[in-house]
Image 1 (cartoon, helix red, strand yellow):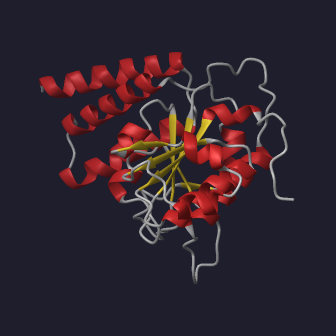
Image 2: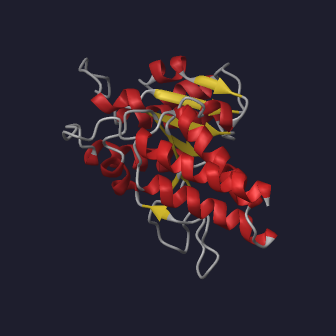
Length: 250
């Protein structure tokens, strides 16, 4: 009982990775690996730790030792997500009122359907226990997701949060790609160029300094929420680059 059956992994497993940013407790790393394999996801990336996994990591991983053995370690979050086409940040921090630029959340069961046609790799990023992802790390993300919880105690254990997201992906994934939806998302290099050009546009446009960060975040979120194709991004890049060039000449 509790072992792993020798059946193929889900089709989506090679395009979804779990990124843990500076996890604090070894037991949670192992428990995350176990949760991932429960739902057929095997690509684990850990930021800010060594790959010399402790006995506690392996003990909590149970029969998901293959996930631990194949996990990669990275110095920075940027390095861990460098080959990914879309970055999904997770957070339990919520804001009300007008200051919600960093909190335009999707729910877990919305992710698989919205990203079912993605050709590139999707990174699901989780912050350290207690603190979660910092604002500067959330700014590296294209989409944000939060798990609905009771507001009296909204922050989940790290491995529990990963399990819920992975479960939602497993039960809501549309594995049949509809016709006409190929190449649905930009490649990682095009994504990087888009974000750089948006940053340049916002840095040069005439507006109050304190508004620039919010404008940049809104542009990224609105564009990426539409899951644009490469050719659509190329056209947008032409417009954004021309606008930035014009502002620089003023």
